[in-house]
Length: 125
Image (cartoon, rainbow, N blue to C red; front, top):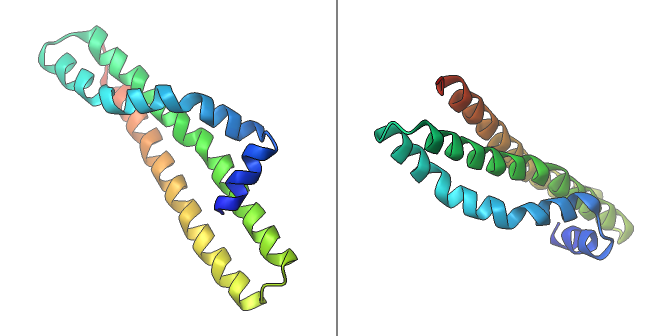
């Protein structure tokens, strides 16, 4: 799987480039948004609440942009295992683990999307 990511970098895989471009903003937003939200709520400052929601939306965008990158890296890993002649039983085990890992990304993205929808629905001016 990690080699799949290396291949993505080497081949200028577009979703990886998009995801990489979002990383700095998503890192900052993921550390700041909750503080802005809390301060905005306690100080009754709608602008801060909206700034927090926008920052959280960037974090959600990053998680969604991560999905194709991770699925592709797993596909590349599975293709590689087939080419080196790895036994079918071991390939199946590897596939099961890679699929389980991918679903953690899907679950995190869905949870974040739902939280964003909740934040938007509960932020009525």
